[in-house]
Image (cartoon, rainbow, N blue to C red; front, side, top):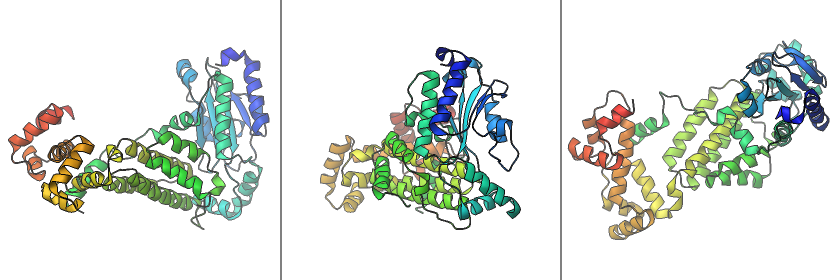
Length: 418
């Protein structure tokens, strides 16, 4: 921690090391956000309202959050990107020593048409674009991977503790936040749909990243994503940098959807997740938010695959489980599944039990109970209606089966879920 490296001279020494290693402006701000040390050009002629030491106002607001000493001592580096693509590293120091802010820097050059489209996204008047181009030309350019390493080095120098790229990225809030609105759950949307039966980079690197999704390996995914250079992405819109990023995110989510299905995720889940993530990204209004949402979407697919046991079963068993999932609101006699699988009913029954440890009839009941748990949370739907929709013989039988798998009656479950 800061007190372990000595006194003010220790913090100054760390700031100088970071500046010399990366040639990016470094600021040490005290607990009142006043500068105690500034290395490198302070303002870099940023053509907009500036905060202390030339920092954008939103960066200063993050610094002024003033966490408790305990929270600061446990704080990880915060990676922050402005809507103008400026990148900053913010590390709160323990013992009320303030914060170290590194930046601004770019992950890739912003010049020519790219700059013009970005400035149009922010409604910058044409008369100011020349000053912005000059500003971007003065900013240091550091690859995303090297920028992450700068954050890791700063953290290790201050705390004397190791930190991995995966830990750094997982600590970035958006990856941990649910992307779906509470009143628009993809699970409930899935229920409704089924009831009504309705880049320019090394392709091997891309293949490796999506292979991690297929394998449900989020840590591997994050490591590979960190190695992608920003300039290796294609430009997918001539007029808008924001639109280009959104198009890139949509194409990445499309590939992730296929990778997740290959990894054993039920395809209706995969497609519905894809819809929700793309809809969410379309509503965003700045590039850093799109970048964060795209990475969160990729991680979501990896998590879903990791949590899906279907990846451990044979192709036949997997296809049957997926068929059951998509036709849960219909009658599902064994003969229908056998016809779908292209084998005799007795052989399918034996194969399914051997691979899953569960009889097909029991598995269907389990899935209908899981579906009932989702429907119970919907307003205006009765328990008898749920029993009818999911083809239980009567409400009494529905209650018996529900309690068998949950330990609660449907009514008790509804009370607990409020």
